[in-house]
Figure 1 (tube, rainbow, N blue to C red):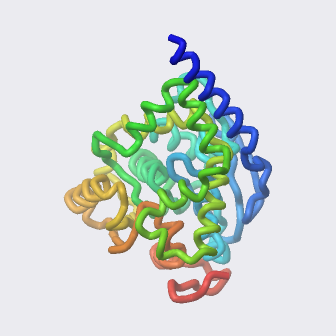
Figure 2 (spheres, rainbow, N blue to C red):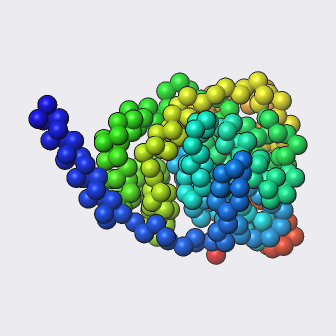
Length: 324
């Protein structure tokens, strides 16, 4: 009993130590203007930049709008970009009661956001969990979608996701709060960035590594145990919408990386698309990891521009051109 109490006190001390040296939560948005609207009685935060046809950018599980910071400069001359914070992340709301952060629940609120902003239909780009949300919208609200770009999104998930161990850690308040304290401390931003980028980390320049570390830091700033636990559980126990997905009519571009830690998932979904949605366009990078928008922003932006089609408001950016 004494050992257990001592361990709890130590973890509590470490947690508050980490929080005391946390990042600056008021860091300015790198691109665009911060905006907030209401979706199903909850505030949803987004960053808007650019002009042209509206394109929604939906981040992955624990990410915020900043996950798109490397592709936004390459797209903003062609589209009106609206990069959102999913519920439970960033400056968006944390709904209380009756909201389990399921893909369909997030999709419903994205559509509600479109209603508030009077966007009848638009193109949607989603990363990972955000790609699942985008595909869910295409399946359940086909009239609201012009096209979908899913960066390692999914219709179906394997039973064992990489988040099972995280769930085990976060479900215990003191231990889970200590984990979040470490995440928010800023001490492990580069370690987390290196883990996210996997085998591609050493191929990045020091400037790129610093930029990605900064993006990861912004995502870590707003981490909380309850919402991260709910989000991890939502992905681990994702609801099945394969039958609805078989009826998707919107054009879909599916991007994946052969070196992704989610390769089992992407293989399952590629097989699903080939069997049920043969018109889905698929591009896989032999050296690609899960977050292609971070690893290969120029190539990703060029594929989006080619697939969606650029507006006439600016020059086409190709993969061979340097970033602004």
